[in-house]
Amino acid sequence: MIERLNDFYDQDIISVKDFDKSKFEKVFSATDKIMKMDPNERRELGRGKTLGYLFFEPSTRTRLSFQAAMALIGGSSLGIADVSSSSTKKGESLADTVRMMSIYSDVVALRHPLDGSSRFAAEISQKPVLNAGSGTEEHPTQAIQDLYTIKKEKNKIDGLKIGIIGDLKYGRTVYSLLYALSNYDVDVRLISPESLKIRADSIYEIQKKLSLKESTNLDEFIDELDVVYVTRIQKERFPDEEEYQKVRGSYKIGLDIVSKMKDNSIILHPLPRIDEISAEVDSTKQARYFAQAEYGKFTRAALLALVLNEHDL
Ligand code: NCD
Image (cartoon, rainbow, N blue to C red; front, side, top):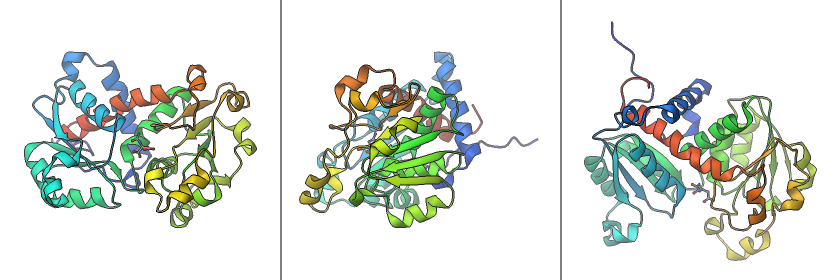
């Protein structure tokens, strides 16, 4: 009998749109297994394998959690965290840089400011490419981590009321999260300044699958939300600094806002935060954004293990 290979084996992870509910659930159950696994057994999953990372934009959590994830499954990682120290500085193309990385590693994680960059890299690379953030378009591994966090912290995803707050125009985590949530039965509330509403082409697509309402006023929804997903205003993506100045600091989650939230609600944030959640909120029971960052290590370990191994975990 020929055993079926796991669906992720040797595959790129470029967009959440390529996922259905069963694929998410498969990553979640692999994550549960990875968390509980005997460390020696876990280190077999990536033994002798190398992750190559190419980060053309700053990162703390995504890059480090990919590296920590690879170490967790017994593999190693190498890469470029600052392109100014690479041959990109001399004018080498993205295509050649990706080609080189795919020779030196078994799986490539790419972060790049251009939409379409990961899809392009996947065409060139001899090894699977994992999108670690492409322009304003998508951040699929973050969405997987976000959904897993909701599932762990709320014990379910279906039936929840989820508010997404902040920069809904330029925040790529928002798009991946919304595409991912489209597979579930959830109510979504989108709260942003008028100029940072979800892009028209995407809202059209998302509205077909998700029940959602938009507002500029956080107070309108705050007391009914189960999940409050806060995002950073993406300063670097504004074409005009003046436009950024108009919306900076639009929403600030402080203790006053937390006191209006449901007692068992949770606050998430992909991080980094600038001033949208005040430090005093960190010690409230609703604050789950650091736990969310920790789950990211395990969801990425599960993804890497699934991509690198023929069979299910
Ligand atoms: C996010 C990103 O890079 O899109 N960060 C992350 O990966 N956790 C969000 C952001 O930069 O605001």
